[in-house]
Image (cartoon, rainbow, N blue to C red; front, side):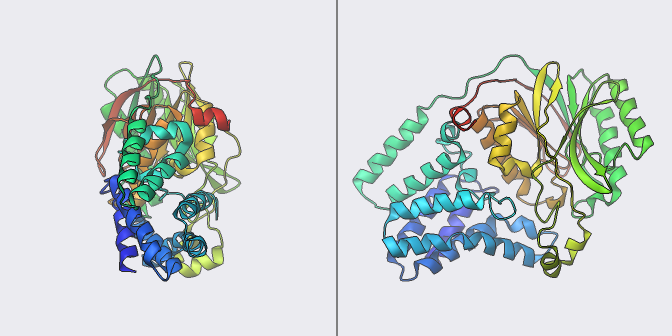
Length: 438
């Protein structure tokens, strides 16, 4: 069982903050070979899945405690139990790999809408096989990585030759074509007065930081200014002084503002991305549809409160029901709010309806952990999958401009107030995976 533990640790090292992509291949080689020699393949699979997820997701417990983190890792590990069962029944590595991939897709959708943060593909942003996502999506990149491991686990000359040709074919895949034109944007990473679960207890202070940082950093001419999720953590419709500040800022700079705003509907919060015009008027608004379970709403609330008393402090958000894009100078932006970046269908739908993407996120809840770096890696993969330039902007970092082939053009450091000026190139090209699934 020690080999299963080591295999899980190796795969976890392919994810940020270590981020060495081929460790996933080595880890799965060891895991598959462990299955072939284990008398308890079900237990071996569970141990592998637990340690892989526990290490990658250790950031989830920084502010809520050890128990919720361990329960999340255990839940993720449960999806590896059928893998061991299938191997015990078939003794077939191919069927075992198909089970891993199938259960990875199930895990990304179930329960509570799924949690696919540790899908194999999300560790492969540096892999030469990355362009595969534009053809077959995240599933194809996971499959490529896993089947390379299955080939190499045989330790034969034929398997090494086959692996060489697989990577050669991946290297020959064309890059996504560039679009034309550009929008000049300024991203504001305004920081927060504090980090952790209490960052939004001083919501107006967060707004003030972003307002003041914008005045400090907006020295040039921009087509739009972008603020992150929760930058306006107080509904401007209920606080006239906040609405007045937004109007004054946009008029002073003569620039539209796309901001993350917490709205109120019937007393309950909604997580929104709002486009304000140069005159401070709301032009369009997207309400987050893919809410974060146990963060923005509490499933199984009574059980959750037994696990962590902090669950009592979470007011359930109301999800949006419509896809809405923002338009600046005739170019459409698809807003994606934080957790939504791991939801395949939602990201694909937004990409197909826009020419560039904006990911507005708030990493203050997990500041000082690997969460932001892991999310950036996922965002880079989405850029390739959908051939869209992406601006990812966070309250505390990492904020980044990413091109449609996943390259980071510029980025900020974490836990600091900063800005990022850059260009997004609009693109209407639809990747193969988007054409076949739309």
